[in-house]
Length: 214
Image 1 (tube, rainbow, N blue to C red):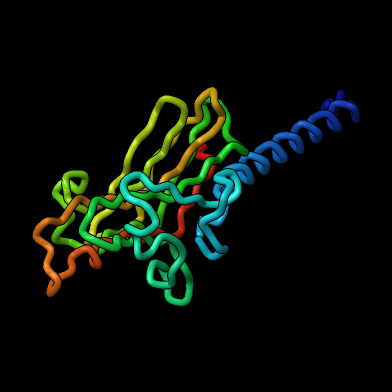
Image 2 (spheres, one colour):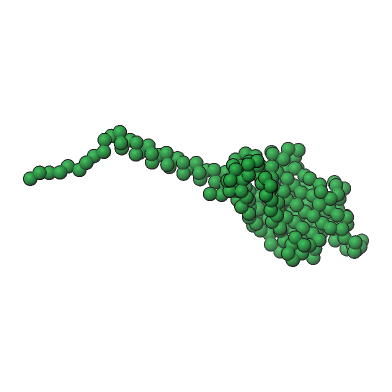
C-alpha cells in the first residue's frame, strides 16, 4: 500500500510567510498608534497659556475689542471640566462688543486627504438668556472653529450642554489644521449697574483633542 506523505512547504517559504504576518502586525500596530496620537498641544489647558507661537501652544486673538474688554482671557480652575484642573476661559469686561478666541495651528501629522477627529469635552456658554436658538443667532456665542485649507466649519456650544462636541476634519494640501475657540458677545444697551449682564457672558473650554480618524 502506497503511503502519501503530506506536502511540507520549504523552510524559505515558511519564513517568508512568517515575515509577511509580522509585517502586517506591525503595520496594524502603527496604524493604531497613529490613530491614538494626540496632535494638539496642551489640549487639557493645564500648562500655562496663551503663548506666542500657535504651533506649540494656544495663542490669543482679539477680534472685537482688546485686553481691556476682557476680564478673563486665559487659564482658570472655573473653566475646568473636572474639579482640581484648569481650562480655557473667556469673559467680557463691559457692555461693549467683545470677541476673542484661542488659536492653535497643527502642522505635524496632517496629510492631504486624511481624516481627523476633533473633539472637545467641555464647551459651555455662561449666560443662558443671551444664547440663541439656534445658538449661532444669540447675543452670546461660544463656538469652536476648524479650518483646513479653504474649508472651515463652526461647532456651537450651549448654556445647558457641557459636551462633548465632535467634528471630522479632512486634511488639505496645506497639511495644516487651525483650531479656534471663540467667545463673542454683542453690545448690551440695556445693561444697568444693578444687573451687570456682561459679567455673566463667558465661555468655558476644556479637554480638546485632534486625532487621526481611520
